[in-house]
Image (tube, rainbow, N blue to C red; front, side):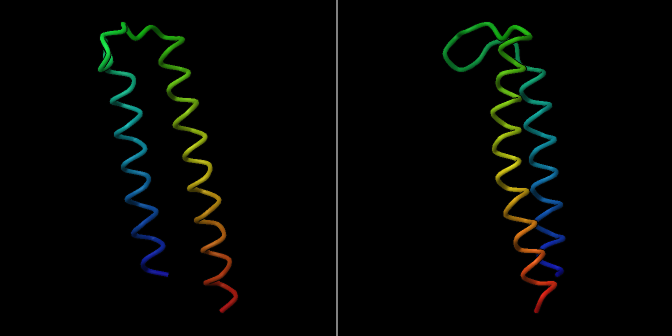
Length: 67
């Protein structure tokens, strides 16, 4: 259970850092100017990835709880 809490905190910190990074940058690596719609698309992609991680954490929690 301790490993689940630690990994959840790490993922939460990583998610927050990535959201701040996406919202603060003005130009991406290819030189494209980041407008608000592009930033929202990037946040949507990050949210889908975060949902996959969340589902994995929920499954992990249910397995730990049942044992």
